[in-house]
Length: 139
Image 1 (cartoon, rainbow, N blue to C red):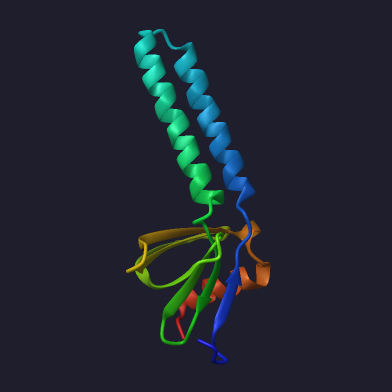
Image 2: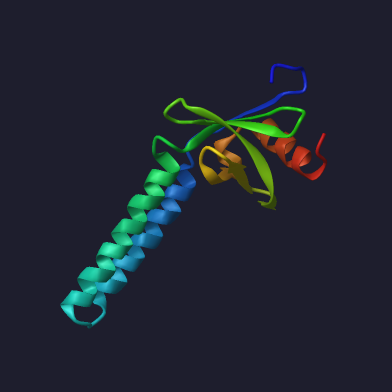
């Protein structure tokens, strides 16, 4: 993967998404607390909301979150996790590209399906535009 057409994208933590998720989960917790239902149901709902918050926090900031994408000319991507481990994956056809957000899905024999969420604020602005261009018009 060391040829001249290799593209490297370093990702930062998505603090904006974490803020949105915190507000959503706090709203759900407030709703559960305020609604008049059986206490056992409230406890179950609160456990589910807290489990969701822990899952998303781990997905965005845990040791297995993706911090670097490296694309070679043969359409093989090397994904680097926060814990330093690397693995190869291929980009799936399903993706979402907007002016401020890119959502990619990779397929890997190492980790199965790996979603990657890239906000405009989590990557260098030039790299964000280059990645969008390369996803629309692959080399």
